Image (cartoon, rainbow, N blue to C red; front, side):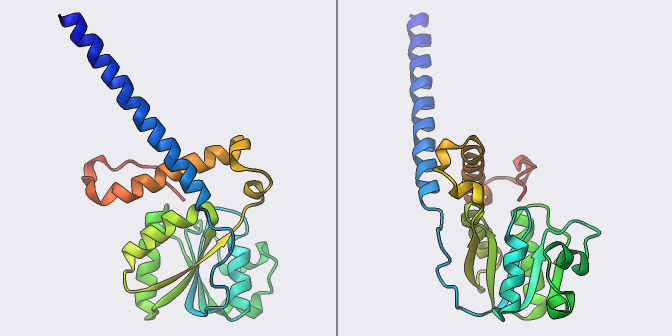
Length: 208
């Protein structure tokens, strides 16, 4: 009798595990399919332009938006300690005198949640009510989730950038792209349920 019960328990556990994996894979596929492929509102001017560091093209895109007058100030969140505006402009090959006066660097954030909190504090101090958010397209869903929670009264315009390695071929054919997409989807799921979890079990290392 005990053997039958044990066997039944193993089968039930295996079935549940299979169902969880299947649901995760379906969710991953839908998540990847939902990635933005263009900027939905490229002409909307906002109070601020906010760039999240951590990937190529982001700072460059933010600087171009600032130079085009798409925002009053550019806030770059999550900048490494010791990096100043001049170094940032030099790295992005922009003339310092043209836009340096309107760039603010945030050094406190270490992950997306930190980006949202840091930006919310800066937006409040500036009295701003709208922002254009610049980050990679795969990172945009989680960024919008965290930013909307941190700034419920602020209008957020998504301005994704598009890493080349994700557009060269379907993501599932590239080990790098597939690993990145799976990781980002898992982080997005965690962000969804994070408010329901006790602080004591919050994992570390969900950076970017």
